[in-house]
Picture 1 (cartoon, rainbow, N blue to C red):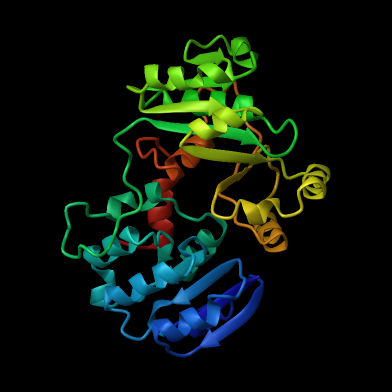
Picture 2: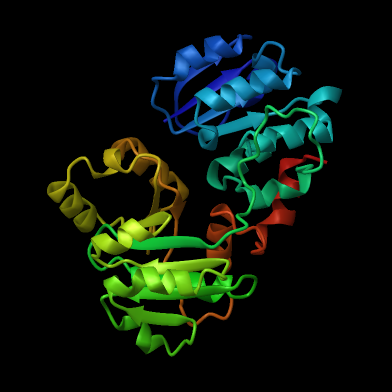
Length: 328
């Protein structure tokens, strides 16, 4: 379910064709908005910027970004000179506010197709250091990233997922993939993929630390989990597999709060994902449909990788989003 906070855009927002659990009208201090929703569970918050008192002061948006989940926020901007300025938009992005638009069509689009940094990077002014208190959240690492991939549900596809990550990243980065305590990578006939034992993983990482990224299929190795810097958890969201997972580990999603949990081989729509998040009281990082590993270019994987921070990956959505959101 979703919440709406509206003021001048009330007539537009109250006619949205989405499920609404709570609507708040009027103008409020940021602290009042935070107090109303800091312990309130919702799928999306659609916020009319004119409902925030002194919204032209970017520091008020910064307070909001610190206290609430900006991935759930869709910000409907007005046409004022201040909020229309490139500097204002750039600072929104610096605070992790990526989903902003000026029209109702853009609100509906972002509801089903939320932005990643890659989609708004063209508005981000990296040479603008006028407000040193605002911290940019999406800069690419200048060191080797070691990323582990682990199945949460049985046979969820971690090995193939690793292969396709390496395949797409290889177009723009120096990358290798490695699986521990298995030999399935051999069947891909790809020189960028390696199979080793857990005890040799530390040496492998050290040997390949000149790479931009190392993708590790950790399988069931506790040692491998301890050596990677980041972990992607894969869940196949079929009813049988989800219920089996919950029976074995009832609080699994609570324990993984804030982690990168991916719905893999998923046939769920955006609406289905929102409902699942509401039921599971969880936030999923990405909804990945079944992929054809033989495709020369997998655009949805590039979209996922750009959300992971690999900003050189290209997506086809960028120009389409610019037109729909009506930003310029």
